Amino acid sequence: MSILRRGRSICVLGFLLAGGVGIISSTQTWLTVQRADAGEPLAVAGADIVPLLAPLSLAVLALGAVLAMTGLVLRHVFAALGAGAAVVLILGTVPLIAAPPQSAVTAAVTDATGLAGEQAIGEIVARIEPSPWPSVALVCWIVLLAASVLTVVSARRWKTGGRRYRTASASHVHTAGPLDPVDSWDELSHGDDPTDRPR
Image (cartoon, rainbow, N blue to C red; front, side, top):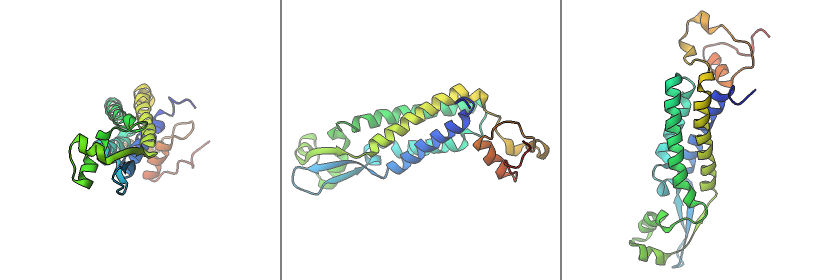
């Protein structure tokens, strides 16, 4: 089955994956500051480096949760919002992977040491070491961007949402062909067994 025919499931999973990983990563250590004054290394969480990480990830997760149930116009609106969030998060994450700038940890170092000013903090920071989390997050943002583009391309092929609000007789009309995971979940939610259908 082509990607376009499976577009709804792939797009929903892409949004949910990116949002879920983003929320989890926001509480994890993204950068570790090794101090020149022989003090304890300072772990800096993702949310402290990229302030929009947690709220945007939560928004993406919410978009993914309702994407399959929306009409054509909202699918395109949600795709645009998802793509915008992906671009913002990519731009905020890429600089942290290879050579994280001192500005990324300035606030954390100030909170830990009480020092302020670029020169004073530069004397404290010996080096900044990135953890795997920025790379993991970047992959998820790319997946989100791809899912947003796929939503626009495949949205017209999705089955009409709102199955649970149809009449009881209509809800029992099945179409031939392979089961879509989202359709199967919808059928289970109103008491139908999607595996118990004529072959």
